[in-house]
Every structure is written in C-alpha cells, then in structure tokens.
Image (cartoon, rainbow, N blue to C red):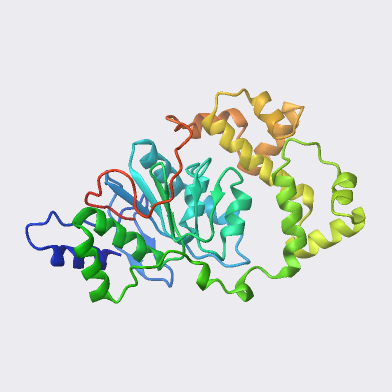
Length: 324
C-alpha cells in the first residue's frame, strides 16, 4: 500500500499534498510474517491507523494469539477513542473486534475466516462478500490484497478519479473489483467435519445467559449427551462447557470495559447467579478479579449506534495517512 500512495504522489504532481506513511507500534521491535524485522516508530497521532493482519491458520489458538497482541489491541482502542479513522487489513479485523470496534457495526474480513469472526463477534454484521466496508469511522477489508482496493479509494478521495485510475493502470491493479465472492474456494473453507461443533458453539454463543443444560443441548441437536460430548471433543479438543465458559468470560470482559453494570449484573448477563462463582471463573481465565480487570481496562467514549453504510473508503477528510 505505501508504494501505491508514493506512486499517487508522483502522478498527482509536486503541487499535490502527498502522503506520509509511518510504521508505528507500541513495541520497540516488530517481526513481520516470514521473520523479517521491521523498523518501527513509537505510537503517535495519525489521520488513519491501518492495522495489518497476522499469521493465522486453522490450528491457531486464537485466544492465546490475541492475548499476546494485547498492547496492539489497547493502542487500536485508544486511537479509535481519540477519533482516528481505523482500518484493518484481512484478519486484522479480529484485533478490531477484540478492541470492541466491531460491536453493532457492519464489517468484513477474508472469506476464509469470516464465519469465525461472526462467531466470535455476534454483535457485528459480518459481510464475507464485501471487499471493503466502512461503518462509522471503522473500515475493514478482505484478504491482504484488498489493501489495494482501500488504497485506491483513499487516493480517489484525496487526489481524484484521474489519479486513482492512472495509479491502478501503472501498478497493474484492478480498480473495478466489487466483491470477494469470485475468489471463494470451498475446498479451503473449514472442513465439513467440524460443522457439528461450529453449530453447537454458535448456539452456545447466542445463549450465553442461559443455564448450561447438557441434556437440553443434546436434544437441540438431536443426539445423545454421550454423542454430543464425543463429537464436540473430537472436533475441538475440549467440551461444550469449556467453550461456553471462555465465551462468557470474553463477553464479561467487554461488559466490564464498556458499561457501568455492577459485577453481579455482569455475572447475571453471562449466566451466573452467584457472583462468587463468576469471579472465580473470571480469575482463572484472566488472572484478575472482575473489579481489578475493570480498573485496568475500563474504556470511555462509547460510540452511539452507528448509521451503517457500505462504502469503500474511510469517512472524514482523506488526509495524509499513517499506517501500522
């Protein structure tokens, strides 16, 4: 993407404002996929914060991976709270989701991981067919080549259609793509052998506040309790209850960060009548009590319900972008 922006500056001419691109990070050292080291600068104010994806494969423990990326997630959350336009590339959308930026927003990501994003972020409207989606200051894109679609739209807004079209021609980039649907290869989607556990997980995620009842859950999927436990364990390596507890803690973290609800109310919202039981579970998963977690991670400036629109560039003035 920086190459396209540099090219746009040349095409637009010396009198055009141009672009400044910086690679910023909360860390002193960053290693890109493939092991190459990146020269980074400390976090600073930018017009547009572009969040890259990260290495993700079917066997990745996504919760553990996101835990390692906690400093980046905190930086994304702070930038959004300060009014910075935030853009994610590919599975960078999972970082935005963890930062709470996709709640009640329309979003996209790589078609390969769209179902997982929808499962983990049930409050988001995930559109796997779209290449680029902007909703209330937050932009998400499809797989990493969609960065070019985003960059061309940014150039179009900043320098006009003539410059964007010329850049696309010189760079041999398709500037007429509208959907990622033609690129979907069903053979690469999660294998059908995991469909059962995915359906169970989605049901549990949509009913977090309901009492866990293994018999009722088995009846919902028309199998015996023994079959449900066996098939779920074969596909995921753990039990439905373990998945439910992880999802409840994830939702509780969000509520503690973004609302004024009491710990007891948060516990009830995720299915626990006894705050002590909830606190013990929360502590095992996060290493902190609910109150301590809220004190450390409480957010401010929660946005109102967004007016959703599907466009292909970030709102606001398309000024010089900073990227990460």
